[in-house]
Every structure is written in structure tokens, then in C-alpha cells.
Image (cartoon, rainbow, N blue to C red; front, side, top):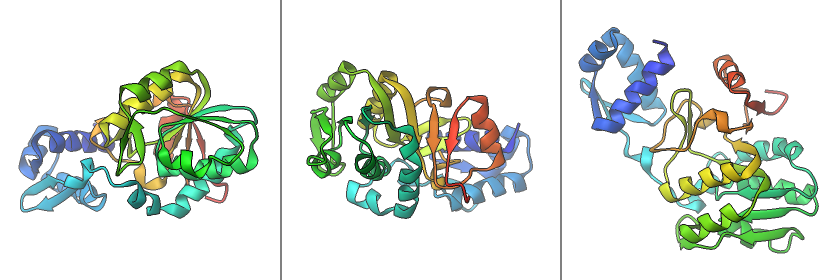
Length: 256
């Protein structure tokens, strides 16, 4: 068993039982207790688990859904680097579906400045408000508005998404794992992202470096559903090899 496979199994144990013990995991996976302690050290540093005497507990923040205003300030420079790389994937006249991620918002800022005659379908109130005078065509999914997330969700939003076949779907997620695929923390928005992926000819995931090698509460889908991942740093060689097997194209700043 490879280290990353064991690591994701440890995370699954954390989600299932909320706590794990070093001795139990060492026996379960046939490795030394020291190896498990190193795994837990890494999960602690990544914010997934909190170490305690003899093991670790699941970090409650793993399935939290922070407010839009809070998310917008996190890794803002990385999001702007991603936005610059995203431009080459969008053409004048494209139809685009996008979610409520703040990374997608920064991407759209660059796109609407550079591209013409776009049709943008979104469940993001922030996008609708910011770009209503951009000269692009905006379509709201409608639905139930979440006051903290600034997003429309629910059956009406789903039905609207299913009405349209688009050139590109652009969205983000909370975590990427080689064994767990893409995952997120908000169930209602996760359902809409799955639909956006289904309705698009080209699927683009925006994910800064902090989201690699993590797992969040709700699984989205596997990497075979993604055409491009745009990030702010060159991922590890292990990730580059892994994504190439799924024929996922990587975009990141050339100087990285």
C-alpha cells in the first residue's frame, strides 16, 4: 500500500469514527506505530485532524462551510494567479456555467475584461451583482438564497442548470485526493456542481495548492470528469503523473 493510499484510509477512519488510535491503525494497515504517527502529524499540519494522546480526532473545521466574505480573503493572491491562467481556456462567445466559489469569482473578473459576448449562468449572487453592467449576458439559476454563502440552491437552481448545454463549466472545491477524488463541504452546492459538470463540453476545476492532498466531507466526483485543473503552483511529480493517467490537463504559472 502506498503512503497516500494509507493516508486516505486513515482519513476515512476519522470520518467514520471521529477519532483514531495509533496502535489500532498500525495493526489494521500492517505498518509501524511510528509510521502512523507520521501520518497523523501530517494530517494535523494540514488541519484535517488534531493529535491527542495515543491518536487523533477529526478536526471539526473539515466539514465547516465558511461564509462567502471569509472565503474571499483566503489565498487571494493565489486566486488571482489562477485567474490569469484561466483566460486561455475561454473564447469570445462562450457559454459558461460557474459556481459560487471565490476562485471562480476572481477568474470571471479577468474573463469579462478580456472576452466578449459571453453567456454566464451562475447560482452566485456575488457574480450577478458584480458583473450586471459588464456587457455580458447573465442568467441566474434562481432558487433558495443562502444568506451566508451568497448562493442560490435547491430544485429551481437544479432545473435551470439542466436547461442549458454550455461550452465550459468553471468551479472549485474544498479538497483533492488521489483516492477520494474531489470533495466539498456544502451538500446543496455540491449537487449543483455535479449538474454543471454534466452539462458542459469542457470542465475546468480551479484549485490553489492548499487544496491538494485533502479530503472534505462530501464527495463530488472522480478526476475522469475533469478536463483541466488550473492552480497557482506546480504540483508534485506524483500529482502530475496521477493526473496524466486521467488525461487531466494542468495549468499553472510558468515560473513555478
